[in-house]
Image (tube, rainbow, N blue to C red; front, side):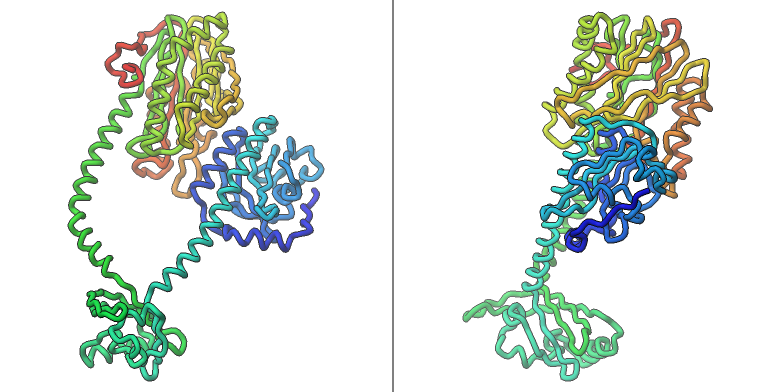
Length: 578
């Protein structure tokens, strides 16, 4: 193993890194999304934002593992990567003399493939890396490496903007301080020894402010109040005392009497007492307005909740009913993380021979994500005649037709969506006469395939770009022959990434074990088992942190009762009715 060397400009580099004030800060959703996207693009198990501190490697964001938040810098891959100007790519760490016996290679997380793009500051210093890695040997292609490089530029722009905003926020605090009345009081005489410009303007006779004492400033009306005020401060029983005063205001030569309600925070600091006055008149008015609005807000909240419940019911109506299409039977489990989710799926016949299915996961869980999901489902269903035409043009070669369909949808999605939302998808076409299936994976977790005569779960797919990332992305299909009784399980990462109270993830292996236990059981029983296992895993908590979607299909030797979607079906909402 070769230890990472120290850059010649290390002192300046560390100073530049510290200027970003990001080390030892909590996890933040925007950075978590970036590493999640990096992992999906590259199809790797893990991704991280790694910063190279003086002697440690510290992780701002982590995807796929929770083994550590920081570690020694000299044995880190990041320590080597920041010595490069371009992306640092290790196809197989076990065969690299620098890393074959590295603790992160021979131990958790058992790194095999690694790619890290240095994060270069505006001043030219390498702060760390945006990196992806996996415990499985899986070469990254040039397109994935270029995408990782481009994503690092986006991350660096975000860090630079954050740094600029922090400086502006600090300047804003200073300016806000100047608007407040600041007075210093001698604790012996209780007389004012200093007052800033705002404090001078606040009194009717500003030239005599130095003659004011703490009693006058705080407007203590009785000797008892004055004694309690002074004793509490000087005995350090209280660090702060707040009183409200109302007085006239003098502005320039002519007196304008303005009623001010002042909040005074009086604290002991060294040999001085500090009095800070803030004008809370507007806040008082706002408090009164808030009182009158409170009931209206409660009423509107109730109305909105009712509307969202109705929208949630409509969401379920967009999903197809469990049932069979020719020789293929479907069943599913869907639980949205909130009223509306970003997951959606569908299956429908293209003609008497071919059918298609898809599972879509839109980034985010907001109403906008749900609307994008509905629109995507509508576009897929509306394009069924075009899908069939492509199949016929390819002479029934669904392995060629399926990628062309996904590529066409990707282009349409880029045109129709001008936001930063993207989606992952599994798309499949089935020849129900022969059992041949073509699957396309677009950044979505790989489905699991099992035959009827063996209790083995085999992942299907090789990654692929999420929809909406690259307008002209190319996709490939994975071919399967569905023997009678074989099943295909599709799922969202809301299942595998479901945490328990110890923040452990449910994981694919636990799901595979459960599916093997239910091998041969009715499809509805399999779906119920998944839901029960997730509920028990997270301690019976109501709801899920992410959308939970599970779709299973089974191929039969003979045709089953047909429940195929058509344009005239009344139980299919917008996607069918157009």
